[in-house]
Image 1 (cartoon, rainbow, N blue to C red):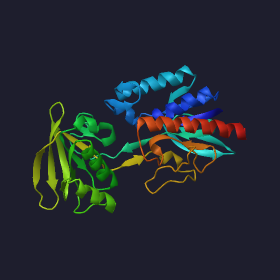
Image 2: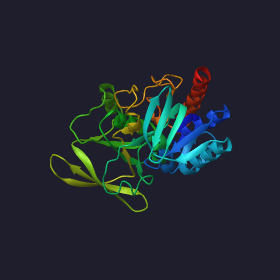
Image 3: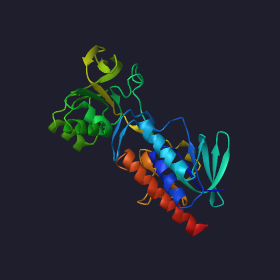
Image 4: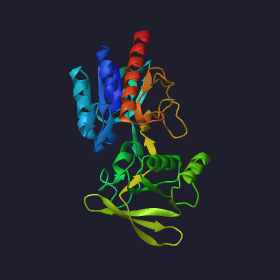
Length: 302
């Protein structure tokens, strides 16, 4: 029987683990490599206070810190979470665990464009986060792929950061909110309509793409410095199917200001939640709040 089991070993999960263990709780972190934490695939971090370097190195520092306080970290993909007699049963691929409280910090995965060159140039011209990477592209030309709120928000942010974005959208009209469409016009951000990205090319980094017009069937080669794929994220919550958790319209877990879900004893932190900003620094804050809330819950109920 654990006091707290944390699902996910990214910045939210490991921050929660540090705070949980410091509160004297028997704490287990279940880490999965399918998918891995987005932090581990981020080549450069420049917006986490006190640290500038690779994402994987920062993640290792989080782990070392958690282990220092006696946190257990196991490699185990979670298949299912059950709520049985006021405690939780965590069913993994190999083992089953029991705990008084659960913190879900499983994160979200970026939806990919699924074209040749995308995986090869991720971190070398292909990005999924304007807030994270805009500074690397100031004064340069980039394409933003997508037509929803995410894509338009990313394009506006890039333009405000001194980048020259062009939006590439597969349809002839946006799906984004009207106010964002008006902002795109105010910022004079060009749009290539009825077009999809077909291939990403480069040497050491991206330098051109092949675009395909869905109406004319024509392929065009365009020189660019970067690609921002902004077609949305998918929160990783499939293992929670048996619990009656409240999600928002995009599938993110709804939490209150203390990171509590509607299920007593179940908390959530980081990118899996319906929080407005998804960054390492905010995920760490979520994890700290979730751990303190879990401690208070256990103190009151056990």
